[in-house]
Amino acid sequence: MQHLTPNEDLRLTLVQSPLHWQDAGVNREQFDTLLRPLAGTTDLVVLPEMFTTGFTMKPEGLAEPEDGPTSDWMRDRARELGAAICGSVVTETARGYVNRLLFVTPQGERHHYDKRHLFRMAGEHQHYAAGEARTLIRYRGWRILPSVCYDLRFPVFLRNRNDYDLLLCVANWPAPRRHPWRVLLQARAVENLCYVAGVNRVGPDANGLDYSGDSMLVDFKGQALVDRAAGEAFVETGTLSAAQLIRFREVFPAWQDADDFVIPAL
Image 1 (cartoon, rainbow, N blue to C red):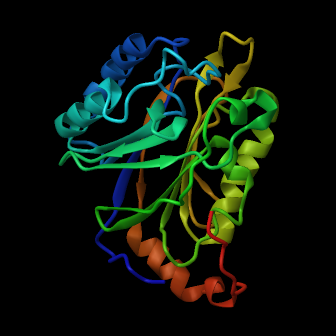
Image 2 (cartoon, rainbow, N blue to C red):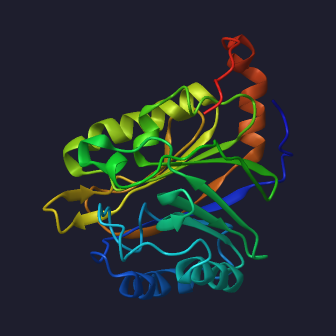
């Protein structure tokens, strides 16, 4: 399972904020203000799900092309900060509308993951096409698995097949279900012997839903490295220790006893 080297620590910044309903320009301006002070202080910035619109079921007229203005904005901010940026954006593709997590590096390299598990309780499956592939990203020596919100409830899809060190989950996860959100972030870290970063929004949306945030950075034992009071907006950076992760996997190699199975093709 070992691929990291002990000197490859990763500074990761969680950006928990309210979102302006279906107003990409105003949201980008808001994040400009929040991200500007981070230049030179972090390696990876994580924004919420649908961070330019809120969790909308009206992609028509809001969806951006695959290399649209928000993708370009992320490229420019990543270069200025010297850090990768990720978050999900309503995107129009040849397959239809998707809830796409974009991951953009300071060098302008772009990766994406389309949300696989669509939240049917909000009708997401009626407005968006499900993702077709599990995506792995290599960045600064770390192997990263991106996911979006409802994906967090599906451990088989997120199973660590000795192929990742950090699980990212960006979300618009409503306050009434904040306890499952917190428990699942910690469970995914423990069972997969990895770090987990979960970033949620705060505040109300136009559908009358309230979001408590509860964004967390969790280590491989399920212990929170970043965990702030519910409801507050914040920007906070935590450091992921490669040496500690490597050591824990050596002294507690539970992955060696994992069930041998193959996830069928999607």
